[in-house]
Image 1 (cartoon, rainbow, N blue to C red):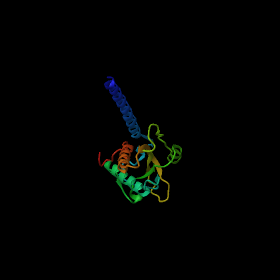
Image 2 (tube, one colour):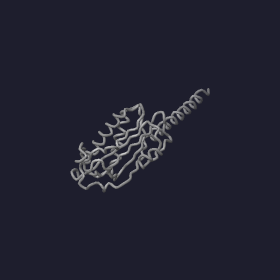
Image 3 (cartoon, helix red, strand yellow):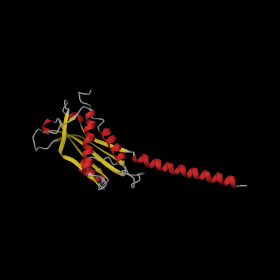
Image 4 (cartoon, rainbow, N blue to C red):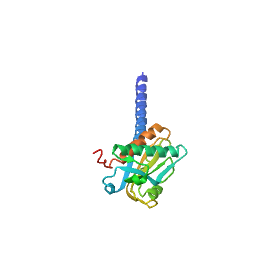
Length: 200
């Protein structure tokens, strides 16, 4: 006689439990989609007529663990930067003597590189918290992009005029997700870069 009531209570408890489980998963995933971006410098210091760039000769640093291929990460970083910068009218040139400015970058992913080490190396740190993120599923990644004035003199140090550092999370086991998150992050990092006169 009390069976329907008992079943009703059981179904209610199961529904609440399932809802709580779903809420935990959604919170975890939403936390993992967070990104933090910090910048330093002044983009107006780039030449007003700047349209071409080359890679910085020494600032192309990749720090990844054995789950990622260092050369592939570097190539993808270069390809993504070229694509995003081209949408703003900037062209990559191989010869640094023909470049209006230089672009350097750094990537740390799937490593135990601390925020203190990143601060020491980059001079910036977003300080993205791991709280609420499953460390077994997501790794924190850091991406640095820096712009330099060319010196025009071989072997002379270049002057950095602007840099942006971002941190976010990605599931290294899903490379399609990693690439999509990475490409979106690069686009977001360069939002403040003005387009050249050619596309204005």
